[in-house]
Amino acid sequence: MASGKTEETGGDKRYYRIGEVAKITDVKPYVLRYWESEFRWMAPQKSKSKQRLYRRRDIDMILLIKKLLYEQRYTIAGARKKLRDLGTGRALDEGALSVEPDHRARFQKIREELEQIRAML
Image 1: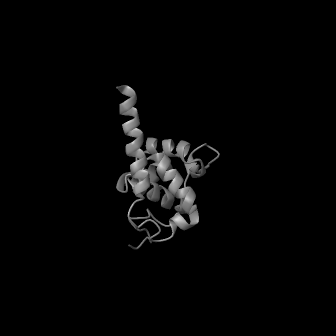
Image 2: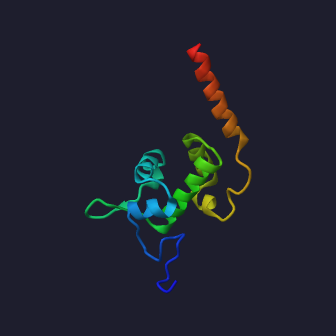
Image 3: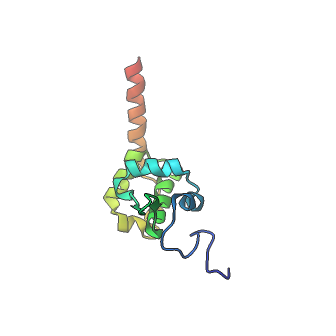
């Protein structure tokens, strides 16, 4: 493309507004705001007019969180733990999460669900 923009990254900009990030990542703005409350380190900078300003690294983290939650089926708590264990820098390394999902997290989720069912009986 002549403008230097790429479809995947949304361009060569330094900062992106929440609507742009939502389009780039295919994650609704309200979900992004919710994730900010669950992943405290994900809070983007804000402009003087209080608009969220995401950097490319923020977008990469959002895509990683999306992969953990939607593709690898982690719970939010499981994804938070996985990212904390890896560290954000290592987690963003190419291929850091290309391995099979952590089965312990899946088993933990199943166990929690079974305990909830048992409590209802």
